[in-house]
Length: 158
Image (cartoon, rainbow, N blue to C red):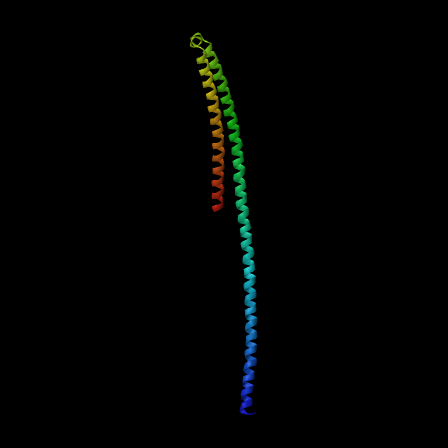
């Protein structure tokens, strides 16, 4: 063999060796990439499961607060009904009082203007009581809704 042929043989051996090395490295990197992809898939699935669990926890918390708010609104409605009934009784008593006050001898002397004034006062009391009841109902509903919203928000932050 001539020195040129020896040199070509050595270069050919080096190229073959390098090609094999590249194939081994390619195989190793392929294995590493496959492992990274598996780890990524497992992590992604775990993150999705955690997100679903958290969303279910939050939704359950919000549903519970909404249920509690509905129950509180029912109780407030019952209280409002009781207050309306008491207001109606008070109006009836005020009307009766106005009628009897105008029926005594002193009121008869004052005349019809006193009777009208007593009736206007009774009507004014009735309207004021009705409006106060409406405002109380609205306040109760707004308060219950606000507290439920606050509790829902706090439960989501945990």
